[in-house]
Length: 199
Image (cartoon, rainbow, N blue to C red; front, side, top):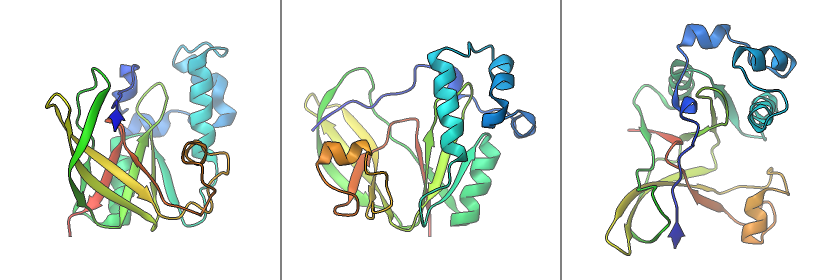
């Protein structure tokens, strides 16, 4: 398969705020003008639209059976994860060459525990992760070898139940399936994290 593992171009998005600062910084739809001003973001810009979308997704109710949190600090991510998986949780992420698209073949697949918390990095002025746990998601470590010999250690997740997903989700268009009819599996970009329990 032809894959390109991308990383965000906004390097500020890699930086977590310290918990005390994150907890005192506005993060809600009704505070958008204040947030834009705080981070010197033009309200009519693409960045402002992305930040607004992130906040709205964080404020939306999760789908049935999903437990979620938008982590605005590393501490809040760890607290949420350990509350769901226990204190022995470990983090996995994809490690690959991002310079160009490569043709990879799968060398090995290692299933992880079925209880996982997946944290997706969002577009924002600083690091914000949409973390969620469902009992119908499985995680895998996948060793990949490129046609030129390059290696990648990727993390993949499979959503076994998509019945509650938005019917307009891109996955259904790409796979040409309907919600709830087939599992949806995908690799995670390098800036996303899967937490699994060691035991």
